[in-house]
Image (cartoon, rainbow, N blue to C red):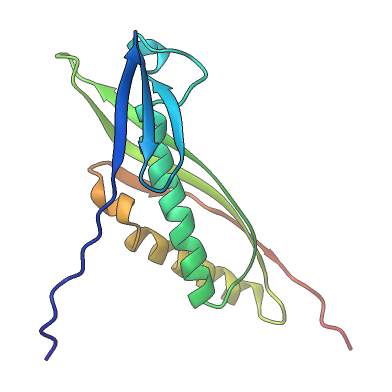
Length: 159
């Protein structure tokens, strides 16, 4: 019988107001940058926003979990690129919520000597595992939609 307690980890950031609609964030892992609200919320264009951070957190977490899953599923990952879009609903009382996050990963996998259909099925299972084990995806209310493009590169067998 396992009597150990669940493990916990703590992450932190520190933000400070710089005046007007500007802030500065220092992340616990070291990076820091200025940020603002988006232009439609009285912020500035061309800079990091909380909305970028939210969508980016989900996108980066699922990618890192896919890399983890690809290793465990013994996939020969050649490339991974994912565009993610968060759709925000603005209610009549001006409250806002991201209703869904849609991910469009483009994944290239080398098949080696395996049948491409077998490798593609394993890639889809790895992507499902990435979503299942993504801390950020599991922590948001938004619906998560993943619409992958999977390209299996079949290398010819050398004689």
